Amino acid sequence: MTEHRKIPVPGAAKSPSENSSSLFERASGAFGLDPFKAPPVPRKLDDPPLKHARLRQQPVAPAVEPAQSVASAPAPAPTPEPAPTPIAVLPSEVTLSGESGSVRLAGTRHPIDRDHLRDQGMIVPEGAVTALIEEFRIVKRQILSAARERGTAKSRRVLICSPHPGEGKTFCATNLAIAMAAERDSEVLLVDADFAKPSILSTLGLPKGPGLMDCLADPELKPENLVLGTDIPGLWVLPAGNQTAYDSEYLSSARTAEVMDRLTIGAPNRIVIFDSPPALSASPAAELAKHVGQAVLVARADSSGQSALEDAVHLLSACSDIKLLLNATNFSPSGRKFGSYYGYGG
Image (tube, rainbow, N blue to C red):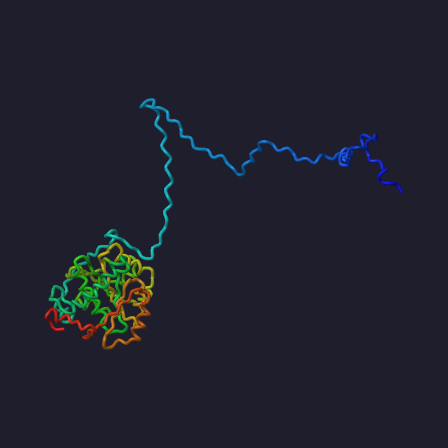
């Protein structure tokens, strides 16, 4: 067996003096192994290249040349900037200030028989202060306050209704209109919307004529041309008009909203009062409730039942503000009697 130490190493020195080197040195010389030394470190490292960097150039202002002469060529006109795109706004309720765009009421004025009003137990304009006047002054203050607080055309439209016939809705609507007409800075339009049994004209002694239903049926008619004037300052009347078999259908059309807006938009001092049919007897009351901001439900103290009132409120629920007016009562929960103050019988 050959001894390993006698195997000649390739490239090994043959002289005894050369065999004095270490095994690693001889291996490095034979196999070309590099010495185990760390690479030299440079004194200054190169800066790493910037990533995603862009050179931002500052705008250079153009050089201003001195004016040469007055007769020099005129500078080109600047390019007009594009007009901003208007933003459409869809309001829930239209609010207009001032009298801009309002429809003026200028119907023929008719005299109102004061004796006829007195015989019916109504408020008599220019008459003595009575308990009836004071009661309706309180009612009108609540309605006017709500209308002014909201400041919308819809809030100035008031529906007077009752659950059943004979509970005094026309009586209350007429007296409320007369009381509101006494305001120094407002006018009142009383609309007879009880198309089946209109009674506003006979109550005030006014002549018959076309009215609201004719305007709804004929788009060419303007409601302000059908309004009747009265000799009571600030009081105007719009008759019910000719009865049709489609009263409810006309009221539910888009034409109704146009007529309502025409009577109120742009007229912040105008209150429109609607005398509607009883809520539980005819459908127009529920349709009219969609176009008014306030509703007054008249209840007769000796006949209106709670269930009837609840059903009427449900039918008028399209109006967000429903007030209750107790009619034909001599009882006051607070013990207040206006007659004891003004010196007339209560």
